[in-house]
Image 1 (tube, rainbow, N blue to C red):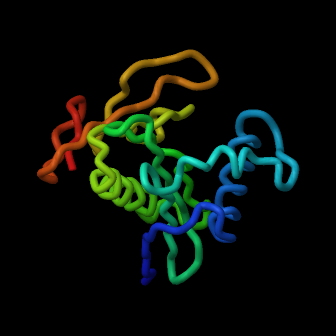
Image 2 (image 1 turned 135 degrees about the horizontal axis):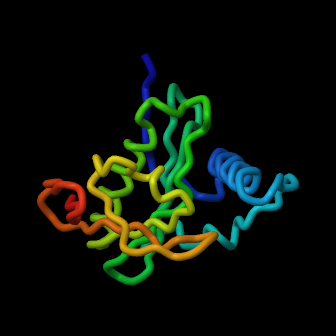
Length: 166
């Protein structure tokens, strides 16, 4: 049985950098071809993933880095979810769902009442609406409009198609 722990860690720590490089490699292999080692948008692309308006969470399974997620402030009440990634060996174990739940909790603590997620694969985020997310619009390739969920005190999740509360 695995032991999954999710904690805030510096985005520039070794394990975070390693996960983010794998994340970037996967994106570029899927959409544009392979990246050269170290050819990612970090650290400039990750500067918002630090307090006071943002943070970076790392999931570990039995002490091994398994996945990550970040949040940055778009405004005082709106946060943007960034860098959602679970290593292939750990997929299908609910780690992505746990990371999303953890980032929602942390977003509330940071004062965000709404979250946005810019994704090229909108259906992969919440294909059946089970997590209460909803799209706020569609763009054209390569980047559709962010999916959005709303947050308010109370911890009650509403049904799909409506906002999600934390």
